[in-house]
Image (cartoon, rainbow, N blue to C red; front, side):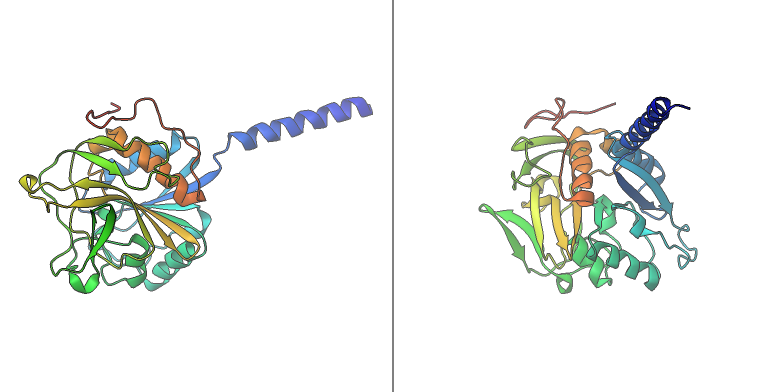
Length: 292
């Protein structure tokens, strides 16, 4: 082979390698599931698809043993990923698994606390610091304050009472409180979400948390009469947690008011930045947008 043909062949190989590399998603995500009071078998495939359609994520799933079975063998390799998406509400993990998760976050990893994954692990101090606030599981004033938005700022409410609750599913408006954060930058000041559980009375350590958006929990919907946190960003060591409180099941995951914050929040948790543009079908302050 002449030098000319050799160089040409090498150039083709380099180009092919570049194309393959460029086609590979830059970020790796792991969805954890297997136990939940919600239908994780329905929601996990949807969450996976939503991340993959951004072309930013290669997504794997780690499913725990079912409820009532020994979870000591559940040892996902968190360190192999940029971000972990929590779709888990179940039994306590083994200490080795818990340590690996905390080390992953503290060392710069990302976590997405999706809906009911704020429910478990009440006694796990580090997990509650990572997610900032949670509900149910016996949480009360000893676990930390409620968070509310009032008079232009977040209130840390130390009133006694159980943590966690919601009224009947109904459409509600989400209001952006931190418009300059990468997750919410470019979103309209307010946008409608389809009928869903509006979590209220979430409480916990509430450290290093930025409430990005809230929703009004109306008393006529068995709510609190407060503006409750819906989207939160939490710093933990060198890592980042994005906490998204809405998105009960498959029906709610079709709402663009869930889809876009979830996609953007997961990118931020994984990398510290958001490159995705706000889509044309994003909801307005008074109109729900869905993707069927």
